[in-house]
Length: 196
Image (cartoon, rainbow, N blue to C red):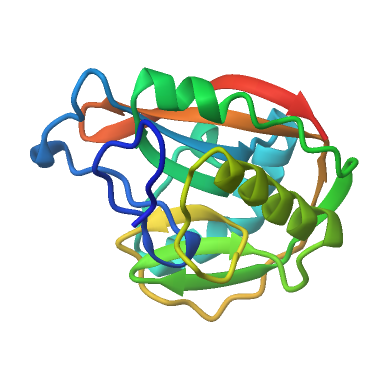
């Protein structure tokens, strides 16, 4: 489990995949904020992702993720106190320069359908490495696992054998995002962004 300063009990999902809280599980304590660093696509990129993955989502039979919630997690921090959130927000910027991310691979993990990349761009790998290095210097702890950047497309999905038309995403900034309960779903709010 991740840990560190200002950390509330939270379970980090497997292989870099986020797990949305079940509405029946109740809300996090008011002094806990569920946050993560992410690549946050613009509207045009979101629209291209939805078009490219529409057939895969349909064939999977899964519950599609709303277009405005699509993102690539870089560092999942989980539930933080306000002090922990403040500390995490002092880590960026991480200057690796803007880069292109080719989303060209459909896969599944524990009934989650995702769109990822066949080849992680060096600047993204460097961003993830340097961001976690700086977070660890502030006392945050990560689980040892391989970083597999992806956008979650659908939940409760079956595996599909579908080729996807590659989506080129020009990435230029890092976002700090909070996950907030919204009925049976979650709402993501971008708290702050930094140029790469």
